[in-house]
Amino acid sequence: MIYIDFDTVHRLATVASLVEPLRRVFASSAETPDRIKYELAGAAKPRTMLLMPSWQRGGGIGVKIATVCPENAALQIPTVNAAYLLMSWQTGQPRALIDGRALTLLRTAAVSALAADLLASATPEALLMVGTGALSRYLVEGHLAARNYKSISIWGRDPHKAAAVARDLGARGWPVRVATNLESAARSADVISCATLAEQPLIQGTWLKPACHLDLVGSFKPTMREADDDCMRGALIIVDTLAAARESGDLIGPVARGVIASSDVRLLGELIAPAHTTPRPAKTVFKSVGVAHADLAAAEYLYERHQLRVA
Image (cartoon, rainbow, N blue to C red):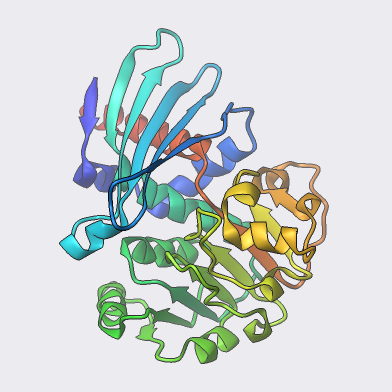
């Protein structure tokens, strides 16, 4: 069994390189049971542990163990940590242990990029990134892999953190600036990506352009919300897994209040199917909470790339 650490993951893959493997797995027959979530008591802020298995006949078997510890931010260590175990379909023997945090950062952004490729308008001009955590840099990279933008804005509650993200991305030659007013930035954006731990909506539907694409990544609990009900009203709503409608406050509340019906929520894989003919409405929302077959596709890609490098 090989070990692929954080830095090696980044040498083997980019956000853009994972989009096509993810496109294939979302259209495949990979089996993915509901993930198991445990709330860990004993800390001032709730901590969470997730177990996420998936397998594909003739491919691989994999499971990710992830933890979310909000208090880590004050210690200047990652909030999300994980380990991924990839096993052989034929024998069940372990093939690779992969740094799960690196895998999650890359695959999360690549799933958002895939959704934007399927849902965003063909010629957007302005991208707004809401959130300044580690994932924000990857999400911007992912959205740039899907579309070209004339301007990119970063908004965060802490303007110093927003400036740091803008500086890091600007160093890569991208047209990035700090947004000081969230409403103004949202009103001018064609695509808005959110990756926060907000418990009250940050994005208001009345701010959105008629053809805006909204990418919601942060909310993974019923108590968490990044967008209000108006963001959902009249939109085509796509999720990476139907578990999102049970787990995320972004969808639970609007369904409970009758703003949207649970039957209105569609799976990303349906858009990839050859028979897909649903016309794209003006406003689209993609809500992700993380799905294990996306992890499996990323892990298999990393393993194959590693084997090619050492062959």
